[in-house]
Amino acid sequence: MPVLLLAHGDPQAKDMLRKAIEARYGLRPPALDSLKIEFKGRARAKIGPVNTWVPVEATAYFRFPTAMRWDFNVKPLGLSVQRGIEAFDGTAYRTSRGGKKPTEVSDAEQVSSLRRRLWAMAAIMLTPLGDHFVKLTLNGDQSFNATNTQLHDAASIYLRPNNTLDYVAVECLNPDNRQQKFIMRLSDDQHSVNDLILPSKISAFWENDPFFEVEPVTVESNPTIADSVFTLEE
Picture 1: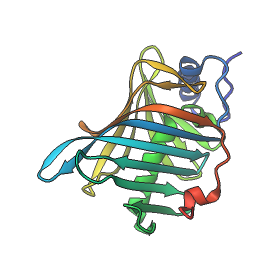
Picture 2: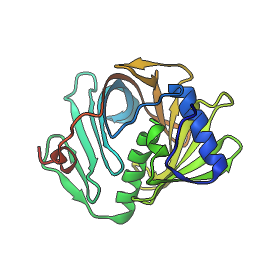
Picture 3: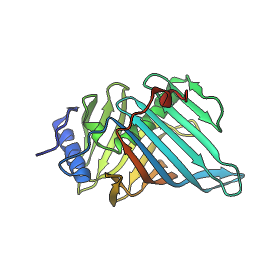
């Protein structure tokens, strides 16, 4: 039985998504209402005058279609751990750095940019793109756009010739506050993590500049996630 999609939009784009889901999960993809993924890897960071790779641990939380959160710990050699949180509860976007009290981001362009990055992360799972709140439009021979109609954020999805997901791209502000393409590229190989098929490695770029690369190490499918996780009131 082919994968059933509730998303609306271009039939060709829907067919591309269906093939991508089948290439990842087979004919019985998981129904994901919520998700928690822990990652380990490395990130680019400026240590003094030098940009270098440093170890990083990260956790992503999702409660589809609108609540998302990204926690990260950067561990420069010989320096204290740098902690950060970015979270969107469906209405407001909040951030926290170094364990400090969360602050709400009010600038509309920054909120949109941060939210698009989280939507790109959600798109990597593929199955959320097939839900009723998503509109799909054709972008090219091997790509389509997925718009979250509740958030009005769009991501471009690029597939390989074998229909596996190659990378996801969104337009947003980079750390220097310039508009740039944020790209999350997936490795060719994939494997099962706690019974969920995922790419072995995810690499993020600002255009062609490396940002971070991580491997999923632990997954919880459909956990109960409290509202306070996304409002940073834990």
